[in-house]
Length: 418
Image 1 (tube, rainbow, N blue to C red):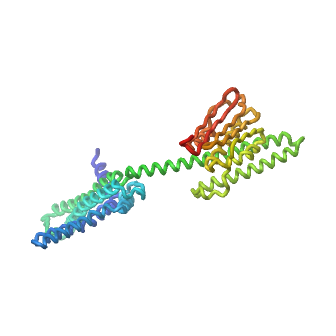
Image 2: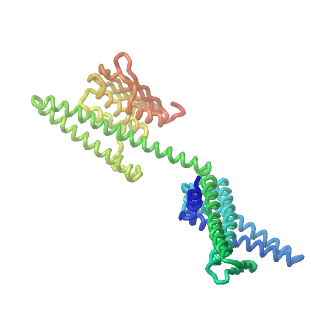
Image 3: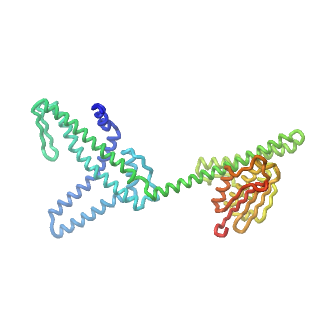
């Protein structure tokens, strides 16, 4: 590797803004460490000058002060501040801590350990800066002074006398090197903190569990909305298509039937728009309480059966009003999707629908003839129905046999007895 390339690579960190942001973070750590160092020095000096009762008093004060100093990094809010500061100064991607897990022991000790490391590294960097910057700048100006003499007073007086121009130039180069090495403490210290930050400030096990649970809820909500859209809009489009086709076929010789079909198309379309408006409202506002139209239940099944203008033979056993609202809503969707599939893929014959309300469950059975080219065992509609039933702890089977397609679902509301 050529020398200019090495020099460029070595100098690159010195001109990055991120280097100096990390340096500020480290210096802040050094500043926060100053009171701790000062208190230790004061107590050590006082204890050395005291005896007897005064010594006991100083020991007690030192113990109380140490307890207060140790408690600070264990405060739950401290971890939030550390995460925000690490993102801003170190450029590390960290999620916000979960409010519900901030008080956990793992969260507290991780935050305390990060606090200790920041103070330790910050103290080292601060000391290097306090000595390196004045020394480097002083050596850098030696070639530009008449006497080529440098005198610095930090803790003790230190002087350097370059007795020749060559020595003065060497001193200037040494000053540049000292300043560069001082900045490199930012690079090294910042890189160490950036590497350790995800482990100490990243999600704890409790945070990860909460995040997974939230993600699970979001996915479940998304799947629920997808099922609602698929079932309601799919049903409406199927009903509109069937009614429009029937109206078109009889328009010339049976205009009254055509008018009735068009009326049903209007009603179906309006109902679908209401359901779509509710679903989009939930998506926009994220609040299911914002729904403006009451959800349909099993008591609305007779109206559902007439939407398609097909022969649906309904047998109901038991009281539909006795079915709990949640189960009744999901049951309605199962019936809706089953009839829609029967109209789409059936042989055009009558559809048998049986609803049996039991003491702890409702059973729904839909049967229809199978079209010649539509023997199939799966689809988004069937997946959605299975999800609805499984969420309630029920069961669903669907399949063809002896030329008939059967959907058989049982939705319980008392899982212990079902």
